[in-house]
Length: 257
Image (cartoon, rainbow, N blue to C red; front, top):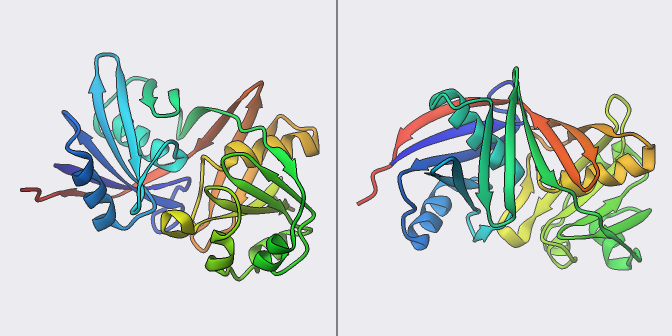
């Protein structure tokens, strides 16, 4: 089984968000895919199988299969475009529906459904988990907490036990940026991912929030993890177009018996 390691949402290795991509003729048993994801110990391992004119794509964290992952989708598209010489548009069928990925020069544009979250009351538990005042909170699949400054986001020292006790599959903090429209960080301790370096799926929540807040259709976002990454987001009705770059780090053969 051939496996590719790709750094997504970056143009240089050792930054962005690394994902493993396994290109297959057919899916192996689920317990084997889960074991490979645990062995890789990356936030996501993607498994992709060609089916007629589209690709069937699945994502696994070290803990479980998930229904949506942006950076591993970008990594998979990068592999198919660059290593398997696909055309300019790829169709993925996933647990979250149908996605189209388009190559535009050195960027890969992904078209995802937007999350339009419900505003919820800020709780003492949120402020305690973040260690500062939370201005607003929103909940869809993920929890989004708005802080008062980019510095508060960048300097946050996470307590993963407290974050895991909050609502949402992941917990995101965000604030307006200076050189970027917004700065965010995303944590997923429930999925055994303490901090996700760059998260495409959660920006389906973050980008619509800042689009409405700033009155802009196009949002340039920075995820301020230690590795860091940049996402170019465009709100189009109930969809979010998220574009980014990617680079190949490694190609390997898995010895599966």
